[in-house]
Figure 1: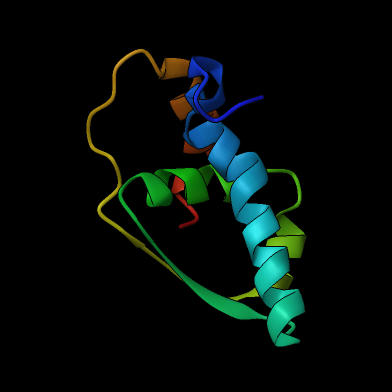
Figure 2 (figure 1 turned 90 degrees about the vertical axis):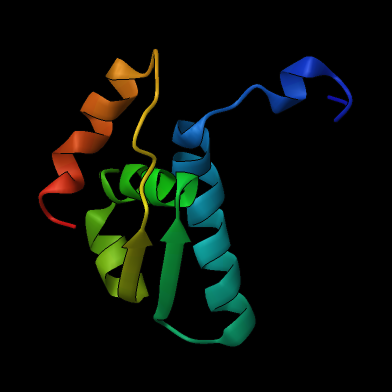
Length: 94
């Protein structure tokens, strides 16, 4: 798919949380040789990270992250009820 095509840019924080963030965590750990890293997320990154942490691989992330700082989560979104229901399972833990 070409990046100039509309469908290339058709993604949400769900895809970022399920695919991009885990890949980034693995890449940074492999690059640095560290077993645990610290992460800071802001705005959409916070919302995506909550999605990441609500995934079934919770133990993996507990073993991969020293600390996680979540700043300024997205406060207003429309037409994302099902995504927020999925992410809300983890909100009390963060």
